[in-house]
Length: 572
Image (cartoon, rainbow, N blue to C red; front, side):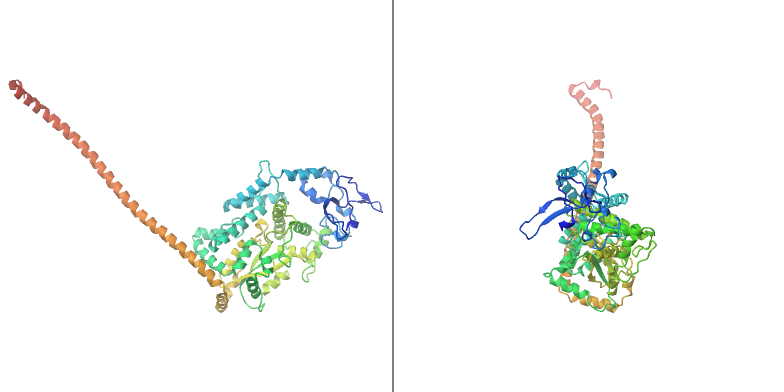
């Protein structure tokens, strides 16, 4: 591999070499050896594009410090991350085509100094505080993060002067995910409550309307029952975000057999189910943030040329992307297969910003080259297996999801949108409820960079109400035949009964306390009346005492005269 590279000593000169034609060769700066085995078996080096270091230290660079773009390098085509011929492509077409600097190794020290100053304790405290925030607080954080990302396409995560960290979509996504996983570990009722309490999602209006109407508690019972219709292992891994990996695990046979059975049958047969797409490889592993960033750079070039016929660099890349899946023929004049108008352009652009915000959080957590902890997903409703075929062919599908899959296909198709059925609906309303609730369970909305779902769930489900009753009955019979549904319903019913019994006891106790309180109030009122009566009596007694005193004084005086024999002196 090293025959293609120009290796620079980190402490040596960074001057470019000159090729045989007399052109400067700006290649790769070898940072340091990570592992070097000289036993003849292998020799492994860690190398980094200078762009990566520049991005991490963006604030320390000025435009004047830029150097010629990588388009002027003589790198072999084997290093082009998309695996395509790059000889006739400009810098912007090459995903690695950013300007970089080869001057001054002092930035190595600055970079290390920044890492050394990073306060991980403070950072972890910030994360913990987010986990404890209320739905309203997280909603405000979401709006703030989105507003910032709209101003800056790639919002960095950084320590602020007071030790706080910039809160971005990735932090909120992790907080929501942890909240859901914790709730599920307690029970289905708690999971439903936690999912409906999440804020800042496209379907919030649906939840809020039922809360305002006073119907939310009744709705929660229906959602609880619907969640019981999902295989327990499917639900667990749906909430955790690792369903594709669990599906590939041979030890989880019950879940795998169940999921395979749901994917079988006549593709035209009418059946209502909720499905999910995950952007993963064959064993259910998500791409890393660094891999995703390369794809996002290509997406930037793709959408940049929308409506701009003269952007030939963008067109050459978009032509490959648009013709990658199916038999689509790319169109010139600034047209794009996955962008039909200005609204879609804006939605894709915002999605790219949100995902970049999310993976910045992974970079700060040293997960830049590790698979995403929660794959990017999309939840939907279908009335037959043909709907899944449409998605695979990029027909009447999610245009963001299709665009990203097409770009990954240029890399060899290792990562693609793999399809899974979550559960078969047994009631017409489960089409709406299932799409909404599973989108929340899976964090499949684009709001925090977690998914491709950018539209309100539960809207396009009219077909569920055209299903014949016989089909619903068959779906219920199939569910009752499973060995897990009845135990779950029994367990959840017992929990509800215990809760109702406890509430009843509390209500009875409250009633008794109310009655006792009423008696106490009546007694107090009687005592107040008696007190008033006693007060009046005291006043009357005092008056009577005065009257008796006035009456007795002359009589006492008369008796004294009688005893003294001076009666003649008494004047009446």
